[in-house]
Image (cartoon, one colour):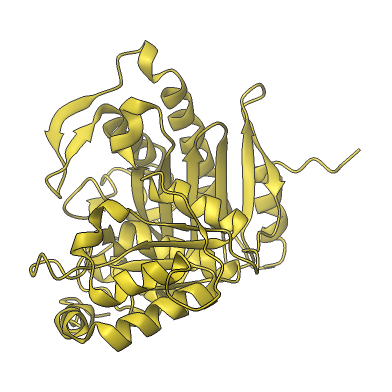
Length: 355
């Protein structure tokens, strides 16, 4: 009989490698697994309990909040506000830091999360996901500050995501490889199903939204043709797959090999930085893909090296097999000087808060 490894057992076994570990970090990861179970349950029966559709409010980005967005956001907060493991949280759905209620103990970790990535897909029953990233507190005092939040991806203690699709899978890393767990709904537990994930050396797919190609820079357009085998003599094209939920597109390419990209553009001069949120989406995925042998770039360099200056900062993203991402960088640096000049000052802006 194969060894049965629950997510709790796996986390505890990893903890044993650190003799001084207190178990706080271990329990924090398991709290995220519990949140994933509750969110998965609600998604599974969404159409039966009037939880599909808009909640009637907008989030900080001016986007219509879905009812499941609100449920997922509140679930993650309520499972983490009282444990004494966190000193603060931040969610894509909130403009500012979420402080720990004063009547609860404050801990030494920071949690950033996107409660429901791809929520516009909810009403059509397409996959959605949860993304989370964990930093250690770096400032003095009991409460988390913006300085604690605005750390580069190199400082991450852990990151992960959950995909709610035909099955519910949680993938996480603490810097010791990437591991995936599938939820067995009959017993309500995550079991190890993808141990030590490595992105395949031979890529299979590329993922982007070609409907927005008219807004892309010249270098990105040429890179798209390169992926299609149109540019580059004798090059075999990759298959194109796009769901529109970044977690789902990333998960497929992590297991099958390939690249996901959402570039910046010059058609909207106010936003050459693109769409994806550095602190709630890009950092976590960049950490995971590097642990799996891949690479994530904003077109100029490694996303993990970006020094954040704003909680809701946006970045372009090219993520997947290293050689595919590096090829994108080459096209951008060769053909997109105008965009580079517009984006670089945003990328290199100094944070308002310093340690």
